[in-house]
Image 1 (cartoon, one colour):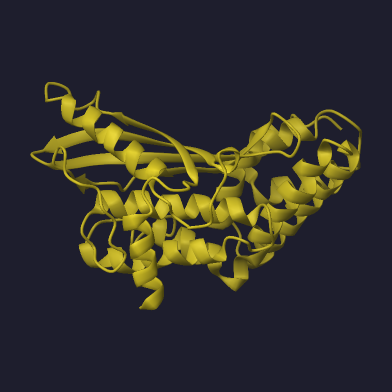
Image 2 (cartoon, helix red, strand yellow):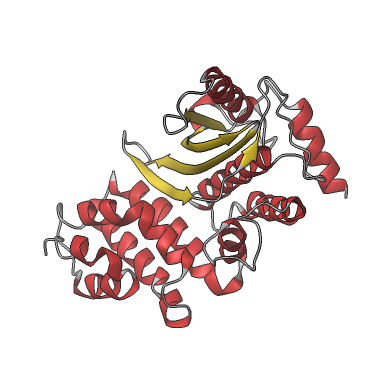
Length: 295
């Protein structure tokens, strides 16, 4: 309870302090048509302010440390103040001493239905489910912050990921899809549970190795950086022997497939025969991409 109360205090009184996220929010309602489009413009501005002006962690992020991310909400239906939608969430992380940013998350959430009244206050209460809109958006905010922190320190994002899991637990009382373990194994419930599960620990280890020991090193030693990125991918492949076609592997390659092809198709050569074999085994859906990697 003290943790939850301190979090509530942080979110309510932390507005305008040190924000962690630099998020571009887009609300697309072209499919709805013929309705009042102003409500969607208001929602877009309100969500942008909510995400970008909230101090989610109390850690005092500097302006250059803010995490670049995006949320694209595609509204396909409306009945009064009830909306049927999907949300595409992306986030990236800069490489050390470089202008390059690497995607850490690319998630397409198809179960995002919510209610919204124009100009309503967007307030997150971690102890009570009030709004699926706020719960989903806040869940992804903590997920992004946790995943980003994992790339700078081994399991550095645990506390933020645990908060995302607490949001799932509370949101299950609302009856909306995407929060329950009895649904598809690729929803918000499974994503955060798997991320924190011991079985999928190699995923979080791989995220740190790939970014901090891989991409961040390439600026000064490209060959060593590539070797460490290869080790990270082989580490991730450990999951395949236990959980083939896991959500964690899909999450990783949804964000990284094109980047991996680019990294290993140029620069100093390293032995990647075992890497390509692992890629085809763990992510066969991307086999056409792996075939383009130049040895």
